[in-house]
Structures are given as C-alpha cells and as structure tokens.
Length: 318
Image 1 (cartoon, rainbow, N blue to C red):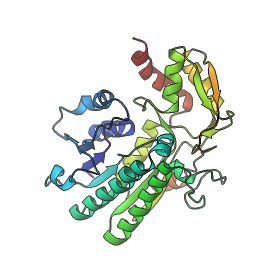
Image 2 (cartoon, rainbow, N blue to C red):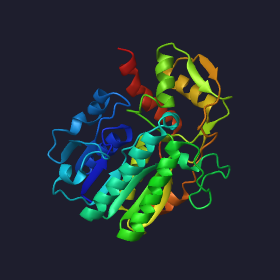
Image 3 (tube, helix red, strand yellow):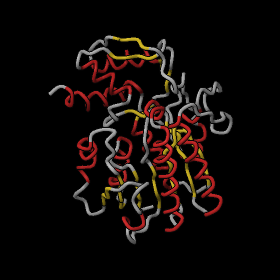
C-alpha cells in the first residue's frame, strides 16, 4: 500500500496521518477544500513541512462539487483514506441538509471514484456518535446497536451503510473506523479540550453543559493514526466497522481538572443547560481493534494533555 489518497488531509487527524505516511515512505495525494469551518491558515500550517516533497501532492478540491476523475487525472491509488467531512454534532442540528450533502453524497462520490478506478482498499472515518445514547457499555461493534441522535451521527452511519453496499457489489474492502473523541496538537478550535484550554489561558470562564456527569472516551491522535495505518494494510475481510478508542471514559469535571494540571492554572466554570444531540457517555470496547488491527493505545490522558498544552500555549500566549 504505497500510493495513498487522503481526503481532508489538511485537517487535525488528516495532517497527523500525512506525517506518518511521509515518515514511512508512502506517496500521498491530499484532497482538501479548506472549508471555512476554521482557519485556512491553520490547515496550511498543518501540511507545510511536507509540501516541498516530491511524493506529496496537494489538490484543493471539493469532493461533492468537483469532478474527481478530472482533478486526479490518470493517477492510481492502492488505498483511499476518507477523512473529509462536515464535523460536529451541534452545528449539524442547524445545517442538517448540508451535513447530509457533504458527508453522504461526498462519500458516495469517493466510492464511485474507487469503483471506476478499481481502488480496492477504502478506509472511512466514522464516529462513536453513531451509537447515540446506547446504554450497553462498553460499546461493542457487534452488540451495541447504532442509534444516532444527531444529523452528523446519522450521516456517518449512512456512510458506513454505503460502504457495505459498495463492498458487496464491487469488491471494495471498506473499513469504517469509529473514532472516539480524538484530541492532541492541531485539534480543531471548536472541540472541547481546545476551547477549555484556550479559555483557561486567557482567564475566561469555560462553559460546561449539563450537570457535569457526562463522560467521554478521550483518544490521543497518535493512537488513532496507529489504527488508521493498520486499517490501510488490513486484508482479512471485505467489510468491518471497528472502534478506535482508549477503552476508558473520563468525566467532564475530571477532564477540566486534568487540563488545569497540564496548564498550571485554575478554570472558572460557567454552567449551561445540556445541549440537544449530545450523548451522555461514550466508552469503546477495543477488543475487535486489538484482534484485527493489533491496536494498542499507548498515550494516557495526562501525557496526551501535556503534549497538547505544549503545542497550544505558544499559540495563545505570544
């Protein structure tokens, strides 16, 4: 698997994946439309160290509106890693049609490209949000039935369903990786850990929604990239949905305390009502990932937050 197409490669997870692919000698084509969801400058900075390399090609394109056959030319690929999407549960409540268009139609366009170009390996970024408020913890792929409660989650589950169809009909191996609350350097500005840390550094209150009892399975980005890399090479079956998490859930207030320790500062908390679409708890069973991908998350929350805060501090305090 030496020639890889990565969509959304300028983003948070995508750029870390590009780092790893470059380090392991792959030829990489990156598609990104530099969506205005957050700063173009920040995304360009994510990729900057690699853009002078011969084996990296960046194409600014929209997976929905641009003809990928024309934009990619005659280039062939061993695998597609499809990370591009409109992200976030709460924004999807305001823009459900756009989320379906980008996340469902965009995935269909990529699968059609794979079918036409005979790309046999397709790795799809799904989400733990597909499980909804399922109370069967830890969430297992074979026993915790998906029950999405937001348009974003529904769009990810639809992407998985499309992958199953294309796998069955056209022989594309489709690996749906259900990411559990990924964090680390280059994290998107809208995500909780970054918002909390920036507010603490700026001596602003942080907003906590609900009663503080919610929990999340926080997974460091390097561990997620380990799982993606293994999925790129996976050959044993034609379709799989696989959790990539850390197999332990952390309460909201505990998370805040850990960020305080990493920053050496105290937070001021502003309590707000619970938000529609937010799930109460996430916790991954990683038994399947361990068996199929030899997945073994290594980074503790404390170490991961320390590395994240080392990256963030100079951006906030100049």
